[in-house]
Length: 566
Image (tube, rainbow, N blue to C red; front, side, top):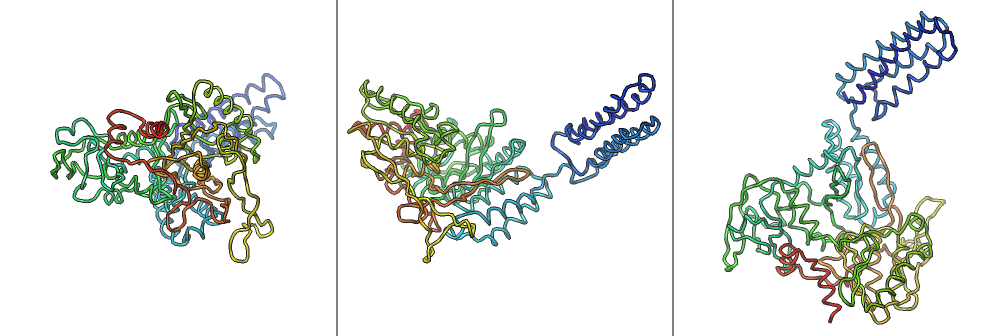
């Protein structure tokens, strides 16, 4: 039994003993107040059980109700009988809980039915992405039914990650409960597999290279940047596909700090998927793996690498080194050279008041702060700005416009177009040709505060939602350049959330249109998002790998600085 349930039963039984004692005490000390002691018992039975009521604890609830009936009689003998009967009934909670296989069971199957039905009704990209809901149900309902029987908390989170990955939409995610963090981390540890001393990444030239390599592999001739030809005889990207976490949207959190450890993604844009296509391979194998690689002398070599532990720590550390941005807070500045300052934006949120507003002027205070900072930097010789959007989780599009308005060339600039909601039919309004009815165009006025100065925006595959929008808008501005090892995530529809017993699911539930009236940014069946085409892709090669994993440099930031110096 759960500790708090045991405490609840014992406390309530003890309370019945107190009530029996009171029947004797009240005969000596007359007072109407003694009757009040019979009322709190049902409340205590429900409140002390920390996880809420459970059918297996029905004897506790019935016993509490029976004992409470002593409030309605003046006969002390009957009060004692009711209190004793209640205590005996409560004691039956121990066998009913211990013998009931569904005691404190999590309703994983019911959660799936509830959340699936909600998504099926409200997910706005069903037609655009050609989602086959019947096929998804037939595939995943048996999975969740089996998880429900096994009561496997970790498997539930991974199954939801796989389900969410089917949509290739950065806004479709499952958020599991805090109580599940430990179980999910253990499941992820097992799914990620073993550590063989390295991670593997896809390079811009199409090859695969070792990264984050343990010093012990120097004995085999493997170091950061070594070309990996095969992993147990297969190409690394093919091996990755055999991982239970391939094409899976799932997060890992630190149990103590509740901060994110890492994210595994199912990428809307196929180009981003290719960039990460080798990283799961490095955890797959038995007690050892056979790695085929190109030695420094150009010869092809084979090494048998032993498993030295779990891959989870190396995997997490690799992601952090590749995804991290400038290490300062959200909307914080850092001078990175004599003439360049960097603005770090981790999320498109300034404060709760502006975030919940639908008006651009809600961000006037933020704009004033940015403007004052720029003017201060300009007085010290700063001419150009780098905006770091790496792993920006999104937020308000109005904040995007607020930031861009400071830097954009003078004049009006287009942001997005709202779709029209048909209240009568409870759906998004369509024209006769099937296209969405266009609502208001959202625009903003540029200030060009930097004058002739330039702006470089750094993105990665986790720059999502409002960060996607910022990328798309910046690509159209003459004084801005967007760079990254990849383009941004490729998801921009507005998001809703539905909760269930064990977690909640987020998904796209509100249409956002582009200037042509089509779906803004999100990829369709071709897995090609409509932003990122003009992102200058920085080559991920031996030079970049050495800078990141040998020297600990911020290679993308340094690349942006070099671009601004020429």
